[in-house]
Amino acid sequence: MKKILLTILTATISTFAIHAQTPKYSSLTVSQLLELSSNGDACATDAIGDCYALGNGGVKIDKDVAYTYYKKSIPGLEQMVLEGNAEAMNRLAGNIMNKDVYGKEDPARAFSLYSKAAEMGHAAAQNNLGIFYQFGYNTGVDYGKAFIWYLKSAEQDYAPAMLSLGFMYESAQGMEKDMDKAIEWYEKAAEKGNNTAIGNLAYIYWYGKDGVVEDKTKARHYYQLLADKGDAEALNYVGYCYYEGIAGVEQNDSIALTYYIKAANAGDALGQYNIGHSYQYGRGTKIDYTKAFTWYEKSAMQNSPYGQTALGNCYRSGIGVTKNAYQASVWYQKAADQDHADAINKLGELYRDGNGVFRNVNKAAELFRRAERLGDENARRNLESLGK
Image 1 (cartoon, rainbow, N blue to C red):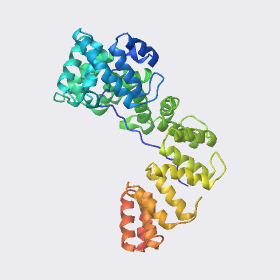
Image 2 (image 1 turned 90 degrees about the vertical axis):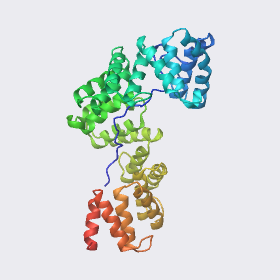
Image 3 (image 1 turned 120 degrees about the vertical axis):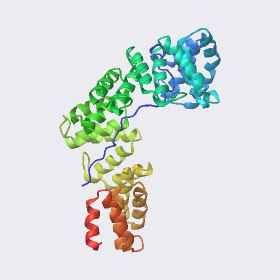
Image 4 (image 1 turned 180 degrees about the horizontal axis):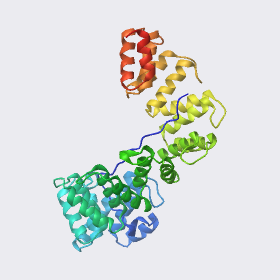
């Protein structure tokens, strides 16, 4: 029986802060910001754009509306910059670096604005200046200066800067790799609710990354934090913990399926695959091949190689659908195009047997070799049976 699947989350950091999420504005609702905006606060107008860009403040994500507010804020921000307002400097710089808002990117001016605001002690600007140095926007890459500005920002309890410091220690950017320091900074950012830091900690502990002792119970704690916020991938991980009865929870197929459904409803292709798997094998529900096929199809239509392979299996064996070896070959091919070893091997089997495709032993052997190189043991055995 196939294992329930997980997405491998990678430790990442945004290469660019869209706008400043400063406490003064980020904690306000759109209604509150609209009132400030109507009284001439251009920073509040810009912050409304943030709400629509990120889905904060009680509104749904709408890029067009966000850009409308960003553009509307620019004249007022320009005036506030002339008055020496550091918050306005930081926000205007963010708009200047978005060609869809400003018409063109102007890294030189953005760098100047971030620098002035950073020197004035603005935490978000200090972080953004660190980003410029880390990634070489308008400057050569300078990890030393990036670290300095991130540290200044982090010392003001700015979570994105804490995340950046953790990333630099983890990635050995301008310093020796130090996972203890990386985790320390990720934990500080996580305590402030930074989702990327929480995800990085979960990933590090789940896989025992870079010498860190694997601790799935600790990892599940962090995935649970994200799952409680509706993160689809985290929901899938927590579901897997209940499916297997690991990471400090008792095995419970019903709870696992509940999490997979939440992940699927949030659009996660692997969550959809896992629901299909649950229906196919009767884990947490009665066996229902028709529903299994339906969920595999949803996953496959999102270009998941796992869903595509499972759908191919359904067509090949008549699981929840009439047997159709040709359709099986179509879906195996889609997954094979993404280097999915199981699909490559099974496509090879179809060519070996002339099932749904013209029989071609040489092509079958070629596919078996390719799958074997990707670590598929069944492909190795298939090659041996061909005497290749």
